[in-house]
Amino acid sequence: MQIFNFILLVGAVTALLLAAVAWQRRHAPGAPALLAMQLCAAWWLTCYALPFARFVPEGGLFLRMRVIFPAVVAIAPITLLFVLSYTRGTNAFRPSRLLALASVPTVVLAVALSPRYDWCFGTWRGVATDSIFQMGPLFWVHSLYSYALIAKSVLALLAAYEHGTTQVRRQTRILLGALIVPIVSNVTFIAGLSPPDIDPTPLGLVASGVLVSLAIFRRGLFDLVSVAREKISEAITDGFVVVDAQRHIVESNAAIWRIFDIEPAAQPGELLGERMAELDAHVAGEGYVPTTAEFVHGAGRHLELRTFAICADDGAILGYVLIVRDVTDARTTSFALEQANKQLRAQLDTIRSMQAQLQEQVIRDPLTGLYNRLYLADALARELTWAGRTGRSFAVVMIDIDHFKSVNDDHGHALGDTMLRALGGLLRQQVRPTDSPCRYGGEEFVIVMRDVTLDQAVERIDDVRRAFADLRFASNGTDIGRTFSAGVALYPVHGNDDATLLAAADAALYAAKAAGRNRVYGATVPAPASTA
Ligand SMILES: Nc1nc2c(ncn2[C@@H]2O[C@H](COP(=O)(O)OP(=O)(O)OP(=O)(O)O)[C@@H](O)[C@H]2O)c(=O)[nH]1
Image (cartoon, rainbow, N blue to C red; front, side, top):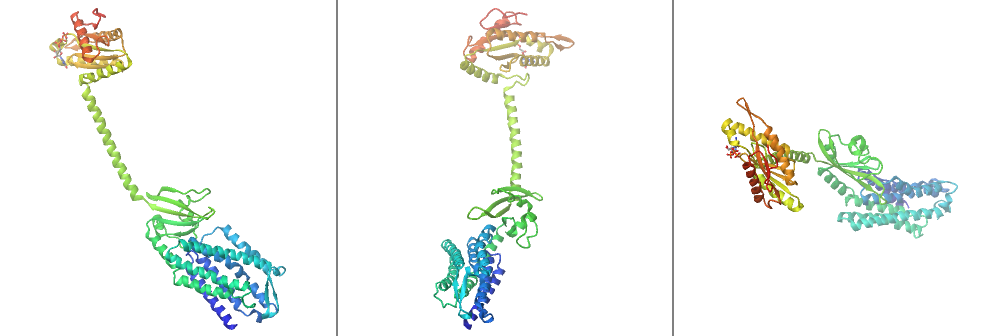
């Protein structure tokens, strides 16, 4: 019996040592739960090792049971928490889940410790060391609940084993052993296979502690994973911070503090909003949605933020991961590119407008500003197409200033130019936007007039004729003026192509000149439309 007690005490010390190791690695997934697990085991083993029956002969064993109870009821839920945090890689749990896990043990503990209802849990028959424990209904509720949780833990470990790496498989193999040994010893006790006054469950816990030490020290249960994670998190240039559902900082890497240029959090648990308010806004409030955002921090630092929620199986949010990338360089480059693009676009606009100017120069007569002969060819082709398609008519008018040679000869070339410009101005003013007035060459002008009858065209040109005849030009103290003659041909009456129409208009002009000048003749109407 003394050897048995000695083994239990050694087991208790081992459990305490394991709890100390777990405390040192308390940020590793599973370490806090393992710490609690080992404290329970140490408590259980110590109570078992102490000779209660010797101190209190009457009911000493029952007293021992009562002192052990907190550890007995807590160990299965804590084991499940250990396995879940190890397999999921996080120590974060929803409070409602923790409460649900604690509910049955709390009720069992309350009933078992109450003197009135303690029989529900079990009774001791016999006296002192010869007593035998008779399990009550609550004992079975507690046992079933504990076994359900342990079964869930075993299944979670098996799943981790199935999907895990070689390293994880080695660890889970040992952890499965550490779970199964106490189960076997406990089943032996419950099934009555062990001596009635000896519960081998604590011995199972001792063996379990030995296996867990093996997993920690030989298989790097916490070290390998956390060291690798640390190395990776410090090596990556993106900053990250992990917060719980209440937005307390759980984990972060050096890059995030570098990016924000602030002192790292001394220890986990600080509020994100107090350290990095810009980030907090993206995960605060109801109705979280994953974010990809860009914002400017401090003096022109461009930061790109991505957020993810960490969710429980039922979708409830346990926390958030925020990843921040400094994209200042990329933005500066793209800004420079944008500027260069702007400049290029401005240059392109200049080239385009110069091109348009050149085009205008190609089709314009520089003296009068009217279209030139080159444009006339295009205008006539366009009108022919339009008239052919619509079945409408158009007129071709040819104008020639009368006795223009004498203006040059008697008053100088400059006055001749002024007169040509004046007629150009008149034509521009008096024709419709759809008409095309052109300088045909020398003192000859051609106008293409869209959608007119012959009479309308003659009438309009006659108005211009009168206006031009009224113009006076000063020369050496005297006023001089000139008139023009014009011939009008109509599509399709006088021709179906440009050459025929121009020839018809020219013939009418010739007739007008021959009839005494200063008049407008329609091509088919020999009689003058008007005379001066
Ligand atoms: N000032 C000036 N004169 C021009 C220009 N182009 C042609 N001329 C002159 O226009 C005159 C044309 O005269 P003619 O063809 O003989 O005809 P006209 O004197 O007008 O006589 P009719 O047409 O028969 O009434 C010539 O003296 C050309 O030198 C020009 O751009 N500027």
